[in-house]
Structures are given as structure tokens and as C-alpha cells.
Length: 184
Length: 433
Ligand code: SF4
Image (cartoon, rainbow over all chains, first blue to last red; front, side, top):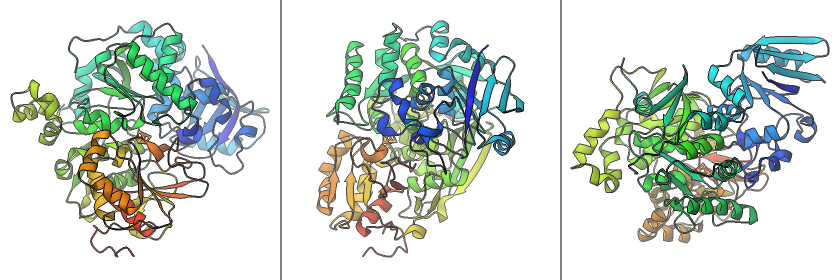
């Protein structure tokens, strides 16, 4: 099955919200690709410049409660438009996490200590990569010859969504339209 | 084992369990607005699935930017409007009839006790005030909901928050929910459903309960929920009178959704609101909360009274009562957005709009407006807004702007003072100069 990720960027903050991931002023776009230049534009983080730091980036590693706030799936789309299909964090807001899997993208939750250890070992170094292999359930974080392998477990439903390519594909095959006779 | 409100609603709507921890529910209604619905419409069309599961159960509104401000927002409205026409969606609210979704849809009687409803908007949780399961969802969930009438959720985990004591004058539901978010934190209720209970909730009217449930998502909750009672019945009576012989019968029927006495909660919190003061946020997260007293004197540039949190008639009454016969500070730009045309009309009849205009406020049409910095009332770099809305994220009302969240009473008092100030309704408050 699929792998997710590649060149990785660390974002050292809890509670990165979807307004920071994609500001409301860009929600006038109706096509996903149009969001590409604006990813993380409003994230204020010491030394972080989205245009410079997200070039070539394929995975993000952050701390607790990533993607909180607005339900805008534009956040997941802006990531995907930039080639970022993996976010590893110590926790996700429910809607954001669901949006990721619904789009066939991987939101990988690890214990806070694990995330902390990754930050200490790899953050800020050039050439870090993070690749999640869903089949074997391993996340490999690498920098030069230094590699850390972290096992992870995904629920069968999340796996099925990734396999199907998203919730629309999955649901379309599996469910009838549930029109009922009475209307409110 | 007894069941919580959410567990009862899940049982009644179960369609499929694709995995141990996953419930696919049938939906009683699906709501949409012009920001997150058009991408769902376009995606379905691209896949050759330009259909809806049941036009009678779909309600749509243009509310975030309305009337349209430019070509792009005009296109968003057009995509929604054309789609609503194409599929015979009668309950579509356009310019002149539109208002903030989470105020408008309950006002129209679209949410009933025991319902499962989704919308592509995080503050859909507001509707839990009616004893319904009403989570906000993203656009793909919305697309599937529109097409199939179903949505997937994890097994519900309920968290009970019991509110005891009595609110002091000048302290409102907004202060209570700020206290809750401040206490449990921005992820204190993640993947949980917050069930509100206790005498304070019973005493609250439906508008206050909606304010309470509205900001549960600021603590990460899937939604808030209150048990449906006589007040719920009174609010909904004009819509449900055909279904029940009398109000008592309706209240009795809705009691089936009440939690069982032995229901299990993942966490139970009790809060005595008696000592609660008016509260206000500082910084860029909604759980950064302090008594207004401690922030008093912080200069502000703009005041926004409105949004799905506090743009209802009761909110306008409180705020107008404070500014009546006075003039807002010359440095302050005051903006009032009545949340729906019905509220606007009632506020006109009651003279509240006159009060705001005399005091120097700008009164806009019903819209989300300044709340998310997409249209009216955008802040400039370094500006500060005292706001009755629900999010103070960095850049929320405009890049580089700062938002302080507070009740309409506190916002009105701050407008007069030109700085964050306690509401004169709160005992012991120094009077505004
Ligand atoms: S008023 Fe603000 S929070 Fe409420 S629906 Fe509109 S934009 Fe969202």
C-alpha cells in the first residue's frame, strides 16, 4: 500500500489553527489548486517563512491539536496542493483529522513524548525526511545516516479511506441515497 | 448501562458500523453556506454525481459575504444559487432573506430534538442547544451528506458539564462558555460531545443555550448538547404544533432524548457560576481568558456586536440598553450586525437600531461580517477589536489584528469607554466616563 511524506518541516507550536493554515481571505477560491501560494501564510513562528520553508516540503511535523478552529477543508487542500500528504502531530482537531482522511491524506497522531523526541533529535537540521508506510505501519524519520523508526497503528476505517482514495469514493460505493418519505 | 443524549441519537440513526469505533448515521437535515458548499457542488459535478439525497432536507444560505463584494464572492453565491434551483431546494436564503446560518436555521425551525444534522461549518455545534447532534464537518463529509444523507463519526464520548449556582447581573452565557473554554482548554473536549446540565442551563432561554453550545468547538468538542425541555418546545412551537396535541405532550415526547440517570461520561465537570465575573480573552487562543477587570483600559479601535455567538435579539437588547442615550468613544468604530432579517426587524420595532445609530454605531445587513475578516470590518495591522464573536486567532479579522472576545454587554461598555471596560450591569463596576 501507499507511502506518505518525504522532505519534512518541523512546526514547533501547539494549536496551529486552520485560519493560520489558510486565512479566510483566500476562502473566496472555489478551486483547490488556487490555494497553493497561501499555505501557512498567517503562521507566526520564530524564523519561519512559508515561501522559503515549504518549498519542496512533503511532510509536516507539529505538536498538539493541529488544525483546530474552522472546519474549512481548504486547509487540507492547501497542504495537498503543495505536495504535503502527511502531517505528524501529537494530536489533531477532529474535523481537520477527518478532512485529511476524507481526502485520502494521512494525519498521523503520535504520543507527545515521541513528538518531543523527534523535535529534539531532528528539528532544524537540513535534509530531514519523514515517510509513513501504511502497509507496515512504520514512520521513518531520517537525517543523513540517522534514522528513527516509529511504529503506528491506524484503524481499519482510516485504512479503508486511504485505500479508497477518500470518503467520497468509499461512501459512493457503499451507501444508498437515504431519501425518506416524510420531509420536515 | 444507561445512555447519554448523543448515544440515544446515535442509536436512532445508525446505518452502518464499518469498523468497531465508527458509526455511519443517517441525517435528518444537511445545511450549507456559500464558502464550503460550492467546492462540494463542483466536486460532485466533476464526478458526474450532481444529485442530492433529498431536497426537502437540505437548507442553504449565503451568509459569509453578502451581498457579494467582488467577482469571486459573486461566483460562490451563484454556484450555490444555481445548484439550489437546479435541485429544487426550497429553503435557500439569498440577499434580503439571508442571515448567519446558525441563527437563521434554528429560527426557521429546521433543528429539532433528537435530530442528527451536519453542515460544512465548525459552529454548527450551536444547534445542539435543541437537544440534537449537530457537528460541523468539512467539504468532503458535506458532499457525501448531500449525495447520500449519511455521515461517519467515532463512537460518541460524552463529557458532562454541570452548571450550578446563579449568574450575577451583567454575567451572561458568553461569560459561562468563556469560563468553560478557559478551564478545559482549546483541546479539552476534542472528540467529545459536551452535554450541558444543571439548573443554570434549565434557567437559560434558547438564545443563551445556543451561545453556550456555539463555543464548544473552541474547546475542540464535536458539538454541545442541551436536554430539550419546555423552553425548547416554546421556541419550536409554531413549527411543531401540528405534530402534538399540546406543548406538554411535545415536552414529554422530547424527554425520550434525555440522558439516562446511569449514563456514562468520559469526564464530568461541575462549575458553580455564582462567583463568575464578566470575562474577556487576550492573545490568540480562545482559552486565554481573564476577568474583564484585569484587561480594563486596553485601548480598542473597533467594536463588533454580532455573529452566530451573539447576534441574536437578546444580545442586541442588552447592548442597546447600555449605549442608549450615550455616544461611543470617538476613536471607536462600532459595528452591529443583526444576525437575521427577523432579528433586524424586531430590533427596529423595539427602537434598538435607533439606539445604536444615535450612539454612533454602523448597523449592517445580516451577515457574518467582520467575524472572519472576509468582508466588512476588516482590521488593519496592529488594530484591536472588542468582539462578541467566537474566535480570536491571529489574523482572524484581518492580518495583524487583535481580537478580544467578550459578551455583548462588555462590548457595548467598551465601545463607550474606547477601551475594554466592564459592563455597567455588573455590580461594583466603575461607571464609564
Ligand atoms: S458568524 Fe463567524 S463563526 Fe459564525 S458562522 Fe459566521 S463566520 Fe463562522
